[in-house]
Each structure stands twice: as structure tokens, then as C-alpha cells.
Length: 94
Image (cartoon, rainbow, N blue to C red; front, side, top):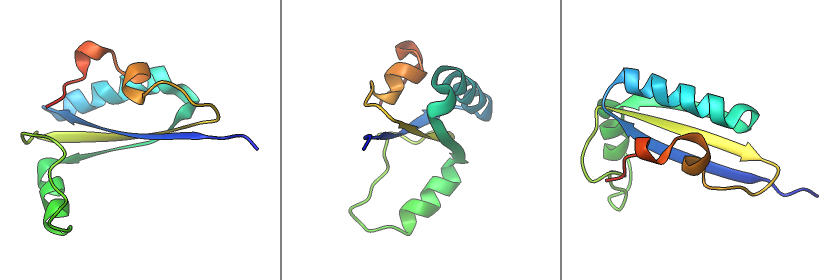
């Protein structure tokens, strides 16, 4: 039986145009192992956070206007998604 690697990455963006650029980079780098991607705005995240358990908090230290979430599945274990999909200088961590 082959083992699969599954990863999820959440990235913050300053605009919808930034989200589109991130999606293009991820698609070009991850090709067939990119299972899905989705984007949402701050208002959507706030709504989700208000409906969750009190112990669930904002994933970033400061709010951002837009977010993108990526799902990757591959048959082999590999590097973290941010190392294969998006150059380091473009990944911002809070």
C-alpha cells in the first residue's frame, strides 16, 4: 500500500490580485498534486471564527483583507508545501 502525503496551507494576502498571483504560482509549481484551492475575505473568516469554539483563534497575528487555502495530495512524502509552491520571499508569516 502506498502512503500519501496530505498538506494544507493557509496564506494571507493584501488583495484579490495577490490571491490570483499566489494561485498561479501554486498551480505552476504543484501541478497535479494541487488537489484544491479556495479563497475568502476577512469578513468570511470573522464569521467562521465567531461560530467556532472559544479556543479557536485567528491563524495570523494581524488581520488581512484576503486569504487563500491550498490542499495538496501526493503519493510520496515531500517538502512542506510553502517550500515547493511559493518562493520564500513571497511567503509572509506573522
